[in-house]
Length: 278
Image (cartoon, rainbow, N blue to C red):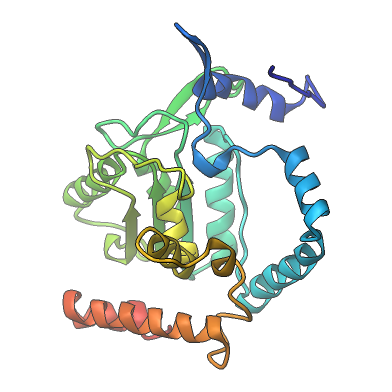
């Protein structure tokens, strides 16, 4: 049985949701099939009941406080846009660049459940009526965000986007001040013809998880060949910026490994520019 609760049938959020249904639900010869995309599918009501029954709801508040504290201490400002249109992406990018001034802006694209980037390196957004996908050229993104910038493309065939950026550099030999392509960092989840893996043991956005929670992901991978319990991984205590704690010590080791890799594979000028402030 499939139940659906619609809070606002005329709202923008519901209109954005309708075109995505076919990505998750479809009819096959043996009946209705569903693609949950790993951890992106949640049963909210049962999840809340489980939290209350186990007493884990008491831990949520502390987790939220730690999250807000980290954002406050890092002085990071962020905005998220779910299933945006071209105009919404443009407004978001221009606003972020205006607020960041000469600081680096991060653009994070989660392309799960949408078509792959085109051969020209275009990503997909919605039209104004949320009825179909519209290609967005990376050249537009580059012109809106300018530099310094860093892009994270978590989607299949994300190497196509990197290729498009490189081609843009080749034909654009002269760029305005503050827009040097050399000050643009690109992080792609896979190659131009790659497809993101799916596994019940890991989040759907494995690449993003490796960037944002690398220690947890490493421990999760260790589960496959060791006897570590997931329950313990989710409860590594304290803060990662305090080396006197277990989580802080693990983070310090992880950072040291990253620096070692950087010193062995990157030019020293790049290391000085990217890692000196870390």
